[in-house]
Length: 165
Ligand code: FES
Image (tube, rainbow, N blue to C red; front, side):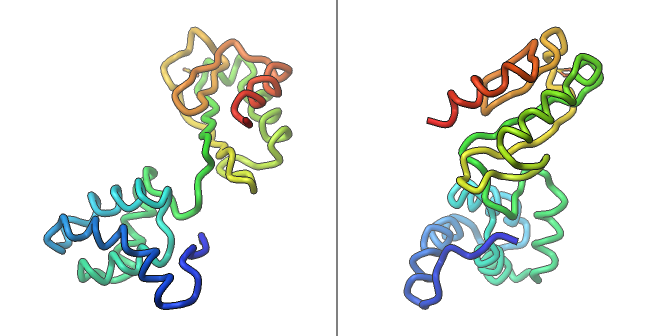
């Protein structure tokens, strides 16, 4: 689970949670507000740290397990910090048969992370995904909003280099 970034003092915790309090002010504090509040909190913090989830549960009168239940149900929510760049490697059928697995392995090797993990410097998060609708370019990866197609493992280092700067 992600570490709270708020430090230990009450003052720094309050400062850390101030943007969340501003978000919560825009809602009535009802349970129906949970998903939009989680979305805005994630936009603000980049993920959903434990302290943020506790505060949301508290303010919306929900138990922690109810909030975690929603957060873990929807793939849009993240409990760990995410990388500055999100790499999505297509593992759909067309990409798979054209070497998507080797492309994924090369990226894992280059970044030293497994599928679903984030590099220690928080530059990259690696995820394998289902068909992203660009089968004609298989095998395909997306880095943020950029599509890279007709890949071979040897093209990967130069592509990653562009996003390291
Ligand atoms: S299978 Fe990879 S884009 Fe469709």
